[in-house]
Length: 103
Image (cartoon, rainbow, N blue to C red; front, side, top):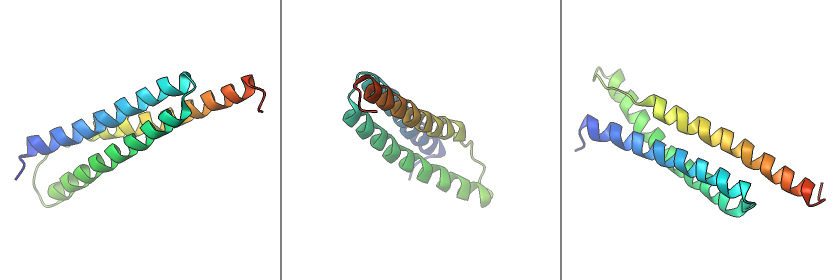
């Protein structure tokens, strides 16, 4: 059985991996590789799902009276990074299309 510290570390780990994938996706989009960018956003989503499940379990523990130090800010930051990354990638796509005369 995981300790609370290990559980929180897992939440931080998955959130951090998601955020890193988002930042990497932006770099690929900036270079015009939208396929890889979208794959990385998908990967970020999978990591966020893992982090969300951990967070849900921590919240359930807390509602049963078990005190936990929830690292929710890491998850929320990663979710925000994914949302902004999607928008930035879309902007890069639109700019590439415009520069190539497809729009």
